[in-house]
Length: 241
Image 1 (tube, rainbow, N blue to C red):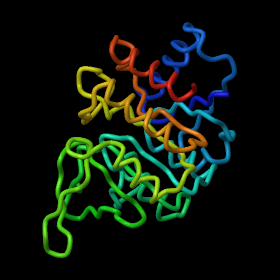
Image 2 (cartoon, one colour; image 1 turned 45 degrees about the horizontal axis):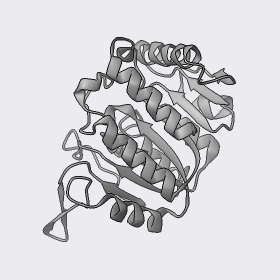
Image 3 (cartoon, rainbow, N blue to C red; image 1 turned 180 degrees about the horizontal axis):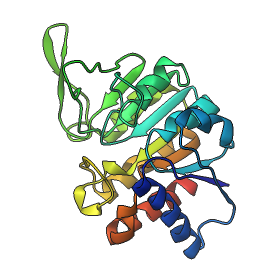
Image 4 (tube, one colour; image 1 turned 180 degrees about the vertical axis):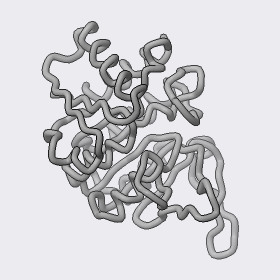
């Protein structure tokens, strides 16, 4: 079964309902349920245990992992979602780790790495980050490069992630990880092409047992984007296959 969660602002809610019809028209789903809530703290009590979730605002993943309590999680996202100021779509992973809904996490392919304000904390415990592009951080007074998808071998990154997380993972894919021509992201976009995203997801499927997954940040922009619709359908088919 596939659970559709039209959560967030109206563009996100409309986008989730649109891709539901898109999948039905293409005969890619039979059994599904729609779960609605205006408050993330109510989601865990309403959603079923499922294999696949299609969600609007990425904050909904916080409710999903509160329900499922996966030991390990991989997030493929243009943003780390590790801001630690207040719970929203830019901080859900930080709070899921803090609340121990998830024990360990890996973020792959982010491009936005820094806090948004001087008062914003970046959560760093029990999580590893592998950016899309070359990025550096200060470690004990010295600048060191992150392992990243631009200059490091993908298999090397997946091997390190597996040693850190173990074999079983929950996978969340934020479609804003794609480049701007896909016209999916409502805000900042990522740097991956569809081909690069599919290669990354194939690698995750080959190296991990994905217990459940979600595809997040669906919005009504996809309605007007041929490349966006193609990307959503191909990611869905790959993860369901």
